[in-house]
Image 1 (cartoon, rainbow, N blue to C red):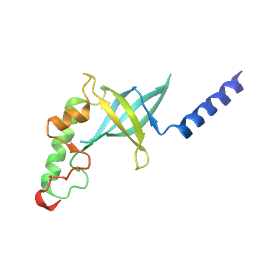
Image 2 (image 1 turned 90 degrees about the vertical axis):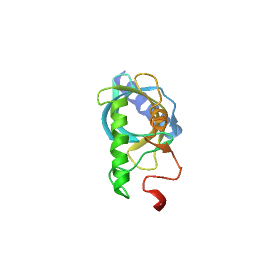
Image 3 (image 1 turned 90 degrees about the horizontal axis):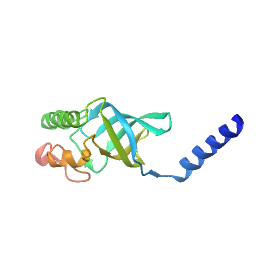
Image 4 (image 1 turned 180 degrees about the horizontal axis):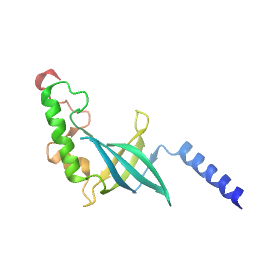
Length: 145
């Protein structure tokens, strides 16, 4: 029986990972760390008693760069964006991930993130002026970008 369960689980995971580019969710997760204004690290429950720690890029937005800013204004705006994420979803809070897809950078996913009060985190940051729509011209350093 144990051998059957092991083979079944391996087959299920292999088939799922080979065929699924997106995971629709919802997936419940605990916020472990706020990386910057558009990336958080979470511990997500992906199966009964199975969790995974992963960095999540917030779908649809771009926030100022905290770690390699192009100017001092961008760094200041990045600190404000990170503070806004902390205020909305502090470490230890619960969020819900949906429309999850692998990011082009390894070890990270892109997902829609809902805060514990049910609001979309990306939408909240856009409404507060802490982020711009992904792909839009970055206004952080004025005419240089």
